[in-house]
Length: 265
Ligand code: NAP
Image (cartoon, rainbow, N blue to C red; front, side):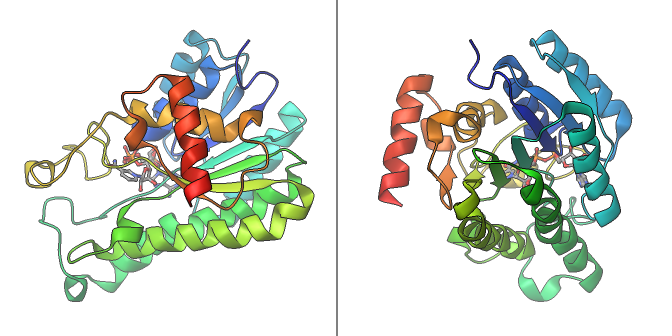
């Protein structure tokens, strides 16, 4: 028995990095999965991995989360093909478009087009996903937005990325309050810093960033995301969880620690 048996889950940014690990983890727990991002070939490769992990069904719907028509089509296609939408993970995000070869910069050094791009993907993209998905999710549905600790700890050089991720936290709290009556849950999940993703550009994590923090593998987030997506977290909504701290725990220990984190929130 998987923890997500019978559920249909959409994951954005599923073509690589954290999203690919997440969607494969959901597939291994019995979910039928829909993979969204802009690059079809990468999505197809991850869908194959999902099937190998045991997915009952894995389908690819290329989607740009900044385009309302495409996001609506993603949700409509999911409901048409699967008959339901139980879990939506708004994971697609970027850190520093066009700046990947430069050290982290101060606020006044950003160009407007970079700032607009960051907000369009990280904040407006999440809102568009909420706008399309939340109305079609029925009682028990779980919407998970991937945030970042930087959005909360924001210090010097955290950048516009941190501002856009703070927006995600606020979106989560508002949406959770607005959907509580229908028993649709909306929560935030932050992975902590992860190596082996492309958030910082095609060369992965630059050494100057690696040198300043503790990093973990994207896999650390899977138990926390499965828990939030599953009925085990029934009743929990409007919280921001941090996955990284549960790195070395068994799934059972992780679930207990997550419950404690919710209580302390
Ligand atoms: P990544 O390896 O660069 O993956 C980003 C994903 O988002 C890709 O699948 C990309 O696919 C997709 N994407 C980018 N723009 C998109 C758009 N406009 N529409 C649809 N999909 C789009 O980065 P990652 O590290 O896995 O990041 C995933 C999430 O984790 C992000 O929200 C990030 O902020 C968050 N996070 C990461 C870290 C970390 O240390 N890596 C820490 C905290 C939070 P296409 O290019 O094919 O569209």
